[in-house]
Image (cartoon, rainbow, N blue to C red; front, side, top):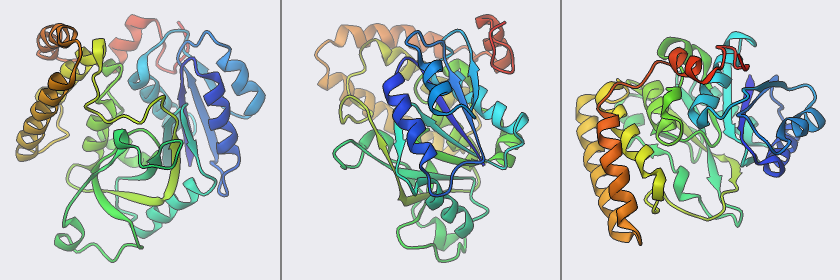
Length: 303
């Protein structure tokens, strides 16, 4: 079991995350840290707190999507992982987080992935990272009785997600060119298509975002990535069945409408929409082309 942490210029939070990983009641067998070109000394924090870690310094910011693609590839290829546990550097797992994810794996070994329950710093559920449930899946597919609280899910975020490595080998890595936003939605939906994931609510992680915000918070300039990446998902990914795609398109349009209605600067959102639509109609670059353009080798080191 290999843990993967993606980090960019948040050395204090990274320190907390690494200390928490070292305090797990069931520690990871190996740790990969992808430093996405940090300029705040984050690599030195890794060397100090987790000297055993496989530290990969990209030399450039490949985005969260690029970092997770590189990290999962490293875990699977260099460390021969059977399971890959991924998280951002602002994710601080409670001591039993991994043990509870593995308990979920033992309860449902054919599930594609296992998600933790993210909370904010005050203990409230974090609305940005709520996994999408699969209603009635257990009953309709004859899934055995799950331990109390565990439920089947369709998608999840990268805020503490344990993924079967054989599924990654079969269905591919995250799409690095997403850069930020929707990369975890597309990836987790692809991993779980035709199957399911499991939410393990006793596996708790603290997601230390600056504010307790949901996915329809006004994103400002980043709305471009929301539009482009959703269109990439709906047009070019095989992560959703046709009926699901229609449902998610409708849900996305409703969420965008709410975002516009709540925004204090709709001009910024309109610019993101106008730029995001044509970009989303063009196929995203393959990972090797994306990393080659950034000057990053396949193994995740600067060229």
